[in-house]
Length: 362
Ligand SMILES: Nc1ncnc2c1ncn2[C@@H]1O[C@H](COP(=O)(O)OP(=O)(O)O)[C@@H](O)[C@H]1O
Ligand SMILES: [Mg+2]
Image (cartoon, rainbow, N blue to C red; front, side, top):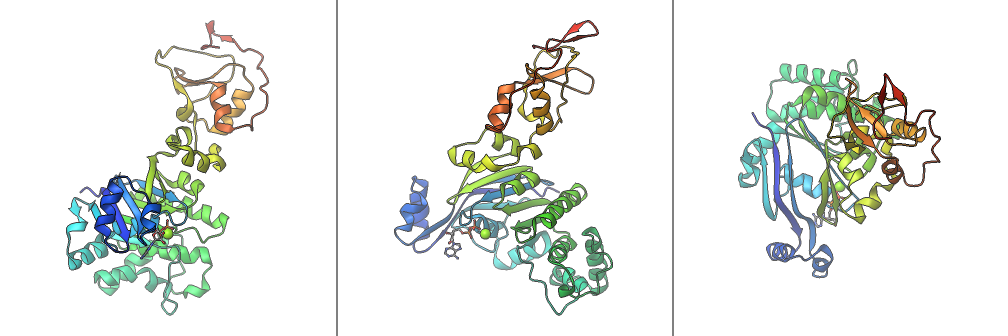
């Protein structure tokens, strides 16, 4: 079963004569031009594919169209133009009843404020989506309890929502979404209201759960660091358009335009980049041994900078067998860091030899 999600040239225009507005957008008009007529182009020509098991993050400032895009993915909003396909089915072609069915069976949504029912227990809250699916009570409670356990809430089943901390309440919302076994998880700023530490915790938990659950996830955030932590792929939105789609590395190393470049200035690169992402690949595959320090493809960025600072030549990147797979020029790191890097201190043995072999391209 394929649970791939595809968005094809999606548009959402609010206001009068939306189809006319789409035509103008196709001919290159932008949001501002339409706004003059009192029309809002919330989403403009959005296309992407999310493979099963991937976390696809949509990142952009407030008002860039993220929530509108997400609501089209589960059919809560009808696109003005374009198609949404999930699991081989064109959601945009379904009638209301079929759409409700798909939404109940295959799609779960997690919002920023989970809106737990205050007069229902944690267990009943987690079982809510299963109730909508018509799952009988005993099974509902069993599956809800399993989902709560996955989210670290075993033992809290009989509690009331207001007995839980904010972070725990978010977990109940996540458990509710997981309990239904939906293949597609849509998360709209789900962690944005949490304190930074709890937020980190939830991000870790989601990544950990995803290793076994392998859902198709679309996660919305306005926080680039969160996007980089969670996203297998990231789409950056601006004024209704997706301006770049790529991995965290792609976006950091090759920002598509000045807007993205200015956005990523504050990103903590050390958490994202590894040697493999920043090195020049070495096509010769020479055997090297080096008297100086070397890196491996998964050496984190900060460590790489530290190594580079002790060398005067590029850092050699060796695979686990000791084969040279790439080099990282000092200038590359300096470029990615901005002005944060100090003067290098040369190592003792910049053109070092060991076992009688000269090191790579000192
Ligand atoms: N129902 C609506 N009617 C009119 N305009 C809307 C509606 N929903 C959203 N918008 C407008 O569409 C744009 C994108 O909104 P939204 O998708 O909520 O952005 P985000 O989630 O990125 O903050 C905004 O300008 C917003 O005011
Ligand atoms: Mg929003």
